[in-house]
Amino acid sequence: MRQIAFNTHISGKFNTELEDLRNSVLTMGGEVEQQLIDTLKAIRLNHSGLAEKVALNDLRINSMEIQIDKECMRIIAKRHPTASDLRLVMIISKAITDIERMGDEIERMARLVTKQKIPNSESVKSSMLSIGEKVVAMMRGTFDAFARQDDNSALEVYDQDNRIDSEYKRLLAYIVKEMESSNESMQDWLEILWALRSLERVGDRCKNICEYVVTLTRGEDIRHTPLENLSQTLENLE
Image (cartoon, rainbow, N blue to C red; front, side, top):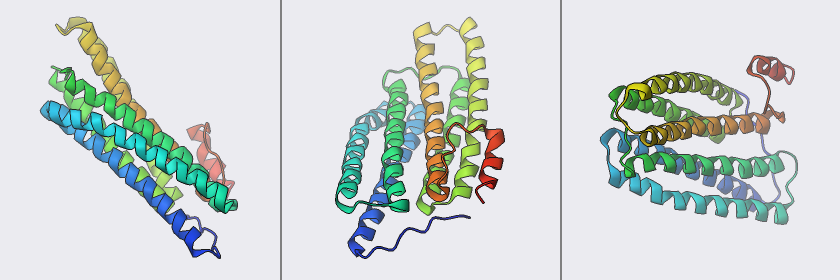
């Protein structure tokens, strides 16, 4: 496991500020993870009250993003961080944007319940929940890798997105067939497809954060690197 060693600062307060900043990101990530868990429960139980709570709590996630971003700007202005410290602050600023967008996607999923658009098809509902559980696991792995600044774990989680995408595409194809013979309205099916797309996008956001962890520890931007070339790219950094 490769981990980054941050600079030792003359100011102990600076160390504390960086640690507090990192912990704030993990708190925000934990909130969003719970949002997804609650949304999946609301879909499974058709619990509109729980779904409404999730939708309303998205405002709290938005507020957390603003506060953390302000703290990033304050640290840059006051502490003038360099090297790995600056990289950490900049990556946190990017990561919270992805986490906030996760919250937006989950809020859209919760609206599926509040609008009473839960799939009548048990197979569709079951498959959606199955993908959801995999995304929850991916989120958990993502934030754990970020907390430990563990690029090997981040890469393992990164690879999970392909499996989620494959399952998403299979369900999408199944839904298209179901639409041809179903009594449900086209609008209802579109609501389901949008919710499913939101779920897949949460996985994409997790993948982004895993890329940031690699950048943080190795100083290499692996965005847009084809998966088949990724191993060679990272080996060249050893």
